[in-house]
Amino acid sequence: MPPDKTTASARSPLALLRVPDLRRVPRSDWIQLVRFLAVGLSGYVVNLLVFWAVTSAAAHYIPAAIVAFIVAWSNNFLLNRYWTFRRGDEALVGQGLRYLLVCLVALAANLVILHLLVDAGLGEIYAQAIAIILVTPLNYLLSRRWSFR
Image 1: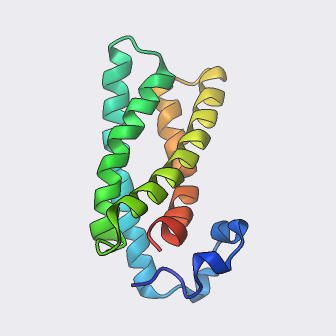
Image 2: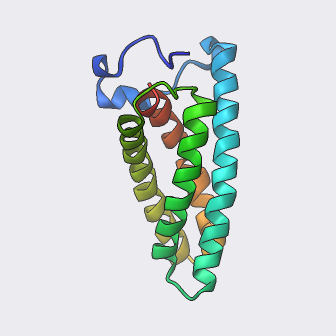
């Protein structure tokens, strides 16, 4: 199931972030989004559990977020590759590197939001939970249109 009709190389980088016309999205794309969100939910739980475990061991919240990211990334990559986007036929390394790059962009956005929320007085675990939710749309668009193209 190809994510989009045009190739990634035919688009500008900003076109990757274009929000689709929701009235014209086929049913198969909605199913794919639901799968992505289910995988994301599993990664969310993994991320928060690892984040909690690492911060409970007296680690600073930023390194804890990085460790949690690595563990959740592994979980999400495999599930998205084989279940969400069904692109297991693609070269593992190339696809993994593209997905890692997308997730590093999402991680950077997550860390900025996390830092701002913690500085604003929100508890670390709640700040991390909100930061993950806020970067999910960016992660989905880039994953669908570039990582698992």
